[in-house]
Amino acid sequence: MSVKEEIVAHKKLAESQFVLSIYKNPELVHDYEIEPTTISDLGWRIYYYIARDLINHKKLVALDSIVVESFVKDKGGLVKELYDKNGGWGTVAKGKKMITEKNIESYYADITRYQIALDLIKKGFPIEQNWEQFKDMSIADLNDALEGEIASTFVNSEINEDKVFEIMDGIDEMIDEADKGINSGLPFASDLLNSIQNGQVLGNITMFAGHSGLGKTFMLLTQTIPVALETGEPLMIMANEEDLQKWQRDLLTWTINNVLKGDFKKERFNQGAFTPKERGLITAAKEWISERIEEGLIRFVNFGVFSMDKAIRYIKKYNDFYGVKYFIIDTLKLDNDSNAANSIGDKSWLQLQQNMVKLYNVIKPTAKNCHVLVTYQLNKSQRGRYLSQNDLGMSKNVADVVSSLILMRMAVESEKGEKGLQAKTLDNKIKLMSADRDYFIMFWDKNRQGNTSEQAVVRVDRGRNIVKDLGKVRISQDFN
Image (tube, rainbow, N blue to C red):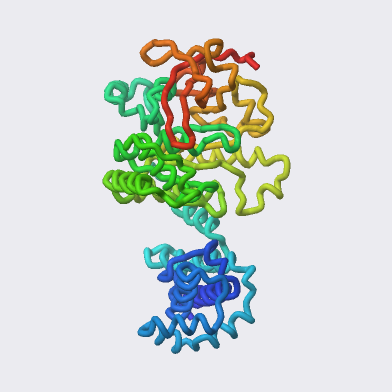
């Protein structure tokens, strides 16, 4: 048996174990969904197709011979032919006794790993020659090993040498690029935020930090997606908290209230029973978005299990193959695919810090030259009304490599009204915060593109996804 034949055999075994696990516990299909075409064995592919259709469309929570064979009979044609040819329900009944569905994550990983190996063989990578070295590696380890093989090829070549320049080399080109605004990066939707930070400059990381539930994702969406729609700049969102439907609901809500000038609260998506007017607004918003989003403009992936290595692989892939320059990680957390939180105990901050260094080394100007916007949760025990890197708690060094650290909090009642803070607008007018409105005050602890002495005040309506600029304030660091 050749190495390729061995890989195919291992993959088919993993496919059978994976599919049989779904039949034993149908709820697993939602956690480990794959496209049927990923399953190379036609027999197990048809079994998976049947199970997935019954679970997703018929909403069944258990699969037995009666419902499966009734479904197959109704489908007829090739479905029935392949089902009968592969032993029908008898194959499932016998197979379920031989596997443990609790191992589905391992089966799922094996399918992916062997498929990657076959794809790499097809593309000419030396997988067959080094199979003894590669066969027991995880996907992440295989990726690292192959990157190491490629890097070692260039290690002694001029391609990989650090170049030494005279300090004045290319200075005229640099001045011309600066004059054209090439270095400004993608702006935020808020002119006020841009006046302090001057956009999302490539080769840098921007961090939005705030307490849990404050509205970090809300700010991300309102400040980035509208700009992507306007400029046509591709954007990739990597989420590990909010799913795709949540982002879709928020985008529709933003469009209705900010573009169509309607009045719609996003809580209506949870309540349902839309009025004809609401349905019309939602439809109009969907059409407006569809007209502006071309394929590949805004991509979204939800991490069932977060790891920085996984995020980095997505950045490399979508930058190399699709030219994406702007990425979002919402929210930065400990790696949880290796039980990191349990294994490193009270030194979890160290892993976070190391992960941020790894991220920066990939996106910095001398590497991929991308921008990453990261959200992060503030320490629960806030020190005062002036926010700084210290409010990140033990993990404050996680911000060492970021170019801009923006910390957010809600304005308190004493900061509103006649005796409250006076905000200076961009056209030098003085405005106060209304007592019946909500506001975010945004602090820059680090800002390589601007100053850190001023704070931005924006009026927010989190129910309608509206953000309006108010002005700048100066809050003393000893203001508690």
